[in-house]
Amino acid sequence: MMLSRPSVNYMSDSNRAIIFQLVNTIRDALISPIIKTFPSLRHNFHPYWYIHDKIQLPKRQLYLYSEKDSMVPLGALEEFEEEQKRRGCHVDSVNFGDTEHVAHFREKPEEYTKKCIEFVSKI
Image 1 (cartoon, rainbow, N blue to C red):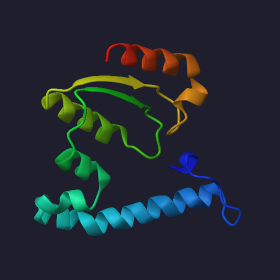
Image 2 (cartoon, helix red, strand yellow; image 1 turned 30 degrees about the vertical axis):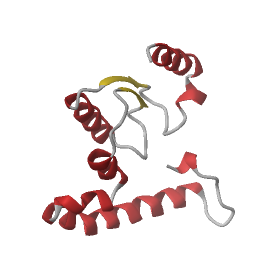
Image 3 (cartoon, rainbow, N blue to C red; image 1 turned 90 degrees about the horizontal axis):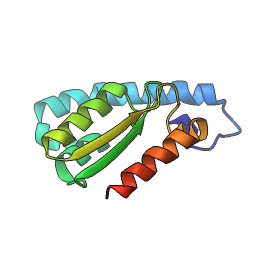
């Protein structure tokens, strides 16, 4: 998440990351009981559930991710991929291993470009 937003002069990136994690932890702790009690409301509280419940995604999908992503947990992404496969989608995915969120192209441009071209050529 931190790489996808500009830095600010009044706070270090490490402090921003700590605050971001703290706010998300508190938010999740408060919202989790509501979602468990009223699953039909879950799409109102988190983008993941909104996409899961309300949006019909394309039948061909490409997921570019890594194990070191500080914004998107690996397990959640893999679970989402499996759900899309159960819905009949053709899912391609690339795990870049050690790159940070939205930094895959910067760190591994050849592999990233190759996978994107392969995906687009199949559409």
